[in-house]
View 1 (cartoon, rainbow, N blue to C red):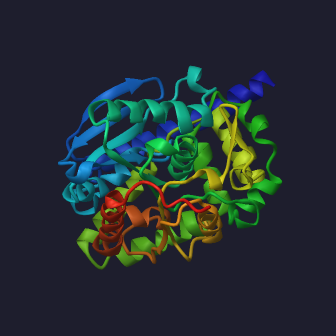
View 2 (tube, one colour; view 1 turned 45 degrees about the vertical axis):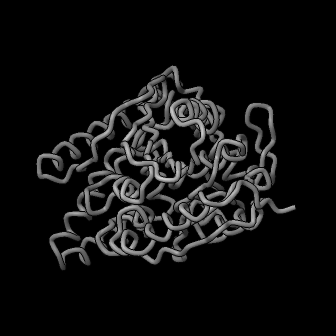
Length: 364
């Protein structure tokens, strides 16, 4: 068994090295990110907190929570498609959680760390310098799960929650990942092969679950992007970002796959984090969610059903209908042309209006 485990680790480590080499080659071709200036204001095992500045008009603060298996620069890919730059232009102070590559000792980090302790340290650092700020959590994909868990555990610290393509209800709403999960062994058996699940293994699982999403649509977008240099460049920048997929701590992998995807505990109100069971009724802050009506990997029901159960009257569900030049539809809401022309202005208007409201609006 030890020899088999070592061989599997060697194979995926080789794939990860090859991906990094391809990424470096694309950097040399000019397809690397063009990020905004920032400084690190907090660092600890598992994460760093970046601060980008801003005016904080109306004491509005954005804390961006990316997915922990992805590099965060998809939020700041280039000046023309940067959510961070748009948040700054909207008069917010902007922070971002940079999840660092997990070491072997972080293999035991799970939802307790990623959805609570590490985020709470970030929020504490922000409130230490701005104690009366209105803090909005902006998140994407798996980062949206972590942000929602934190909002459920600490309702007094969150003024609003923005979820971009974040799956929160599973079971019948699992989408393309359902057949793969039904055929796969328990997540703990997979996690035993690794300290941290390699990024290349996660990528292969995604392709196996939905080849149309992760392969066919990418090829189709490449062809469509050839109509302009700008679209083609953005497509290639997203392709370069996909090569930076990071490892996932073994325990977090187990909890996400078994407790969320397979058992739908968060939706059922039985997800236990630090001894407390939480569900959608524990999310009492205003909430805005963005979904892609065409998505196979995150069907609309995986967001809408959770949203309906959230215990605040101020909640909004916005559709995103796609763009050219995004490579992956799943990240189109962060980098797409129409997303930055229409979707994000609407999101920041909602944040501004919500920040003016008195805390409350709970559904009784």
